[in-house]
Length: 299
Ligand code: URA
Picture 1 (cartoon, rainbow, N blue to C red):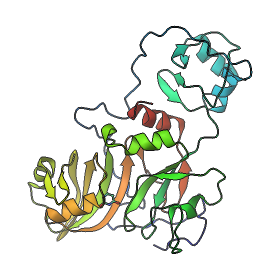
Picture 2: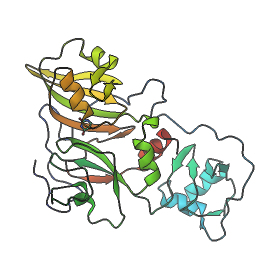
Picture 3: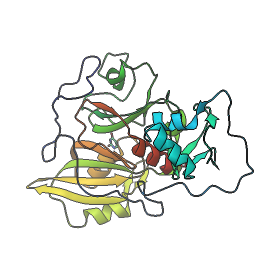
Picture 4: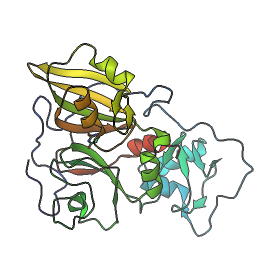
């Protein structure tokens, strides 16, 4: 795969990557649930505790139905119906009358319990990072970096976590610092899914050993889930799901378990899947992806 020199196009182009999988590293299977935590996609914000009513109305603001329509909830008429049906909350308060104006940069809006980002200055992108790209927004040594893929965007974006230079796959880019911090903070334990091509025959007990924990020099690591996707003589494709993000952790773990990694792709973060996004391409997260991601980190 050839790393880009400069800004990458946003759609089309050819895929690449490890043998034994599709062009994007897409794999089957439903959402992976971390034991003890609610699963991503199905999770909704719990009902807010009763709060004394506060005035969400901002006379200088924008009409709520217009904001909802701009956020992709449907036509203004359809958004009026949502409001009248009592399905919309602003700052924890149900709004059922039409004509309410709010400040989209400051208000927290939920529809049917799911957060809707109404601040149009916020940007949420996924990138399918190619191999050979460093996980920085700029590189003083001139190596291909994440910034090359969003150079034409006005917003000052940063990346959520990192992938090794040799690892491909899903990386999120945003200008929402709060979301980025929460997604990378260990307390939220957001699950990350990787597809690894490993050396050697997979023994029957590998999953059990990885679940029980592998000792690394900086402490043990456990997987939340493991499965063999494909097995060939002398090599295999395995999927591992972890909730931690130490440096090179997947490579180190599998190597310590006796199976050096030949290729690694991150395919999912929380509920957000790489899907068939081609290598080197970006796309904006859709409303449901973003709402579910925010719910995972209690936003
Ligand atoms: N684990 C690794 O080994 N590499 C990555 O890029 C991410 C997790």
